[in-house]
Image 1 (cartoon, rainbow, N blue to C red):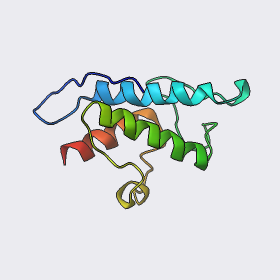
Image 2 (image 1 turned 60 degrees about the vertical axis):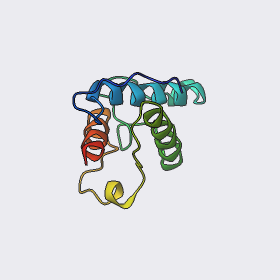
Image 3 (image 1 turned 180 degrees about the vertical axis):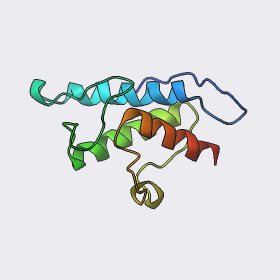
Length: 109
C-alpha cells in the first residue's frame, strides 16, 4: 500500500481525510483480486460490510489487514479486529464513514 502523508489536526492524531484515503485505497486494492461482478463500491459513502456490500467475512478480514497496514504507513497504529470493534452495537465496518469515525476515535484514545 502506498503511504499517505498524514494530515494532523493535533499532534499525534490523524485527520479523517487521511484515514478515508487509506480505507479507499485498500478497497481499490481489494477490487484488483475480485471478479467484475463482485467489485466493491469505492466512494466516501460506500458500504463496506453488510447487506449492501459484496464483501464476505473473509474478504472483510483481508481488507482490515490492508487498512491496518495503510494506517501504520501514515503513523496510526490501530487494531481493527479487536473486541472493542466487534462488540459495538452498530458495526464500525458497515460503511466508509463509520469506519473512518471509528479509526479516528480509537486513534485519539
